[in-house]
Length: 161
Image 1 (cartoon, helix red, strand yellow):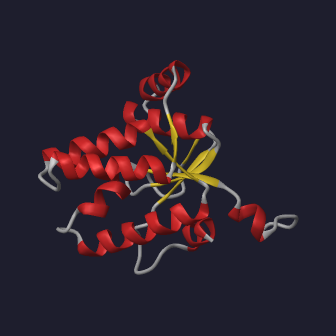
Image 2: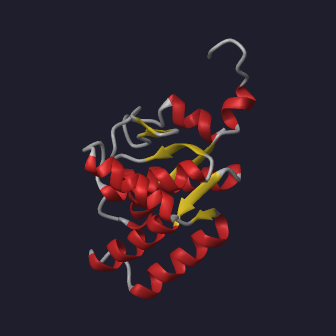
Image 3: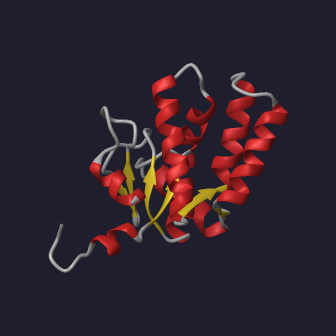
């Protein structure tokens, strides 16, 4: 740990969850990832520092229903539960402009860029996702893959402490 940093300073970071973490909560076809996602969401809720994007909630609902992972009523209940458990950030016009600029520059796809811009503006410094390259930094947000390896990576453990 860099000098001048404390464990409490690192643990105080706000962070977000990508849609894939939410999908694994209900994906019985991926039992290892499902168990990891359930652990992540439970621990993320306990920190009080996790923010979800409106976008991720919508993507979760659509994917869960379209892929047959949940009925629409079950997916709706899950979204309801998530919205009362976590802080929720909505994208703004500025977030959309940032996302379009990132997509035009070829750095990210629009939807990933919108998620990152929204979470960045909401004060998150980390997003947990398996989709965007572990350690990649976009704006003020670093991507951490919580599904790589047999156990949670140290960076994710520290975040959830």
